[in-house]
Amino acid sequence: MTQAQFLLFLISVIPITNYVVLSLCKDSYKLVNIVSKFLPILFFLHLVGLANNLDRGEVYIQFIETVRGISLSFMVNQVTLKFLFLLNFIWIVFVFYSHRFLRLTEDKLISQFKVFFAIAVALVNLILIAQNLLSTLFFYNCLVLLCHFFAIKFLHKKETKFSYIFTFLLYLESLLFFLAIVATYKFGGRIDFIDSGVFSDRLNHSKLLILLALYLGGLFLSMSVPSYLLYRNSNINPLIIYALFFVSYAFSSFYIFIKIVIFIFGLDYFSQSVLSIGFRYFELVFLSNLLISGVLLLISKNLKSSFFYLFFNQFIFALFAIFCFAMFDESKIYLSLFSFLLSITLVFLCLSNMILYVEKAEDKSIKGLFYKLKITSILLIFALANLIGVVPAIGILEKFFLLKILLKKKLILGGLIFLTNSAILILFACRLVFLLLYKPESQQSESDSALAKVIDFDSSLILTALITAIIMFLAIIFYPLLTNFFSV
Image (cartoon, rainbow, N blue to C red; front, top):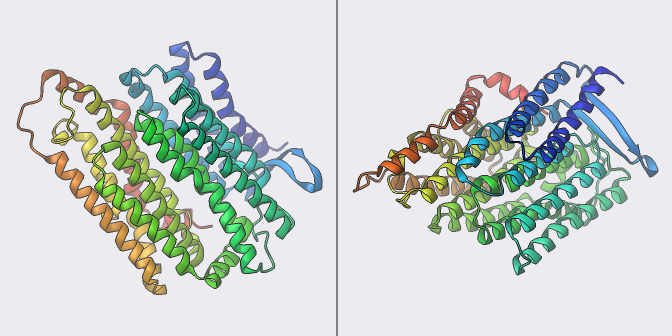
């Protein structure tokens, strides 16, 4: 075993070790605190070591070989390494931020939630380094089972109509993903992630549409209906929603789809196939979903629901951007995902602060919240501006390159999607900022003032926001390095 393979092995087991230790020692507060902060830093150091040992572009380890050359194996290349660093960044940020935040919430499920988050990170990590569709399916199904168990057993104490629907949709998603893999093996003869793609010969349109429908349904069905149902039926903090659906489902689903586009279909073949079918049909699907989520976002009067619709709205837009970059500018295919992940992370952390204050304060209104939670409000405004693409951060790069494609290729429907997304975000941001800046008539009570100070000036939030903001801001400054970083 080479040094690079040994480092890959350690990277695959460190998140699992984190889960095991937290499970065994969850009653020891100090030990959980030390382990939960030490292991993500150790993971980062091993990632740096692995990056320095990627001499030939990839590292491969095979654990179990099954029939016909199909194996349970791991592989890391330059693309995978970028996403491992991103996962590690989210892991560190979440651990440092959530530690104090969860104490303030006084939630009885804190220990269970920390264990859940640990195993979620471990499974997402294994999904990122999976070498073929079989390995990906196995760990993705484990993630589905985990989210089902957590949502039903912890968030809902009894079986309800919601739980049956939730369970059905989760397993339907897994079935669709499995059928997609079977169809891939039948049509292409293999399921490994390879640079040239599995489909060297052209598939007819019916087979291609079957594959796309199965993969899109198998990866993104759970992002819409189940998460919406969870929001409707659970009185839980957005931070838990963030961990349950964003870090697990959104991150892994997006990443798997990008790997399928690049290493199963092949970028050239995917682009030619979608254009031959007609990209306008895909644009209509994106536009209709964007409009529906946008209308729900603008008419929603509840802060939690508003930010869920914002998340779903930007999820649709990010998927549209991935399609566009995959077809017309493959070097930027990862740009929209990085922008989405970093922006939504900051949005959800700020939202969690606001929700926590509203729930615990005597004044339950969000009007004038800017004067009570100034740091949180400023960071939230920055994150929304980055999503719109009007601040010098990574969001403006995504919008610039996407707009360049839309103008160059004269994609009318795509331009309408772009303008619709911008208009929805501007209207939502203006309405929210107006409420935040609304001058309160009565003075803040001493208890509310003390609570706001504790929440807003939490050192972990400042660290989280500062790191995120610096990464976003420096993205525009180091433009040449950034374009090389996002190259395929």
